[in-house]
Length: 199
Image (cartoon, rainbow, N blue to C red):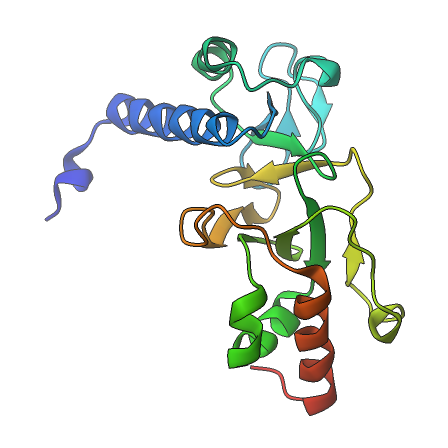
């Protein structure tokens, strides 16, 4: 029997809080301004103070207060140890693709040199890429492939959201802090579509 199975609920909650705070501080340390999001049990999300229903990407403080200040981040996640949010288009653009398509493209060795961090969400894969990204013409009509608009709030790992959680497929550390190349990634996605094979 593992040591974790002997944990009491309070210990599990303390570990979870520490994990979220550590992740939020890590993102702030990278220069990614973060915001605390709502509580989510996998089915619904709500404000931890007012219990008002919220979307997973709705902050529980004013969005304009997004910060990289460690003291503020520490204070927020001591009080709101839940979803971690940041803005797309500020430090990086976010290229979204269906998970099956990202997995098919990942088989290609050509894709590896273009990759940056990749987050997996219940609604697909999110490639963090250099700013200024646009959807290439070959993928313009492909359902689920899009660049999130500048300013859109996104959830970062290890956030729990409706229908699941957000996790890293490829962490920022694994890429040495480098962002992905949107054109190269999309070329690999397009090549995967042409093969017509799903994993």
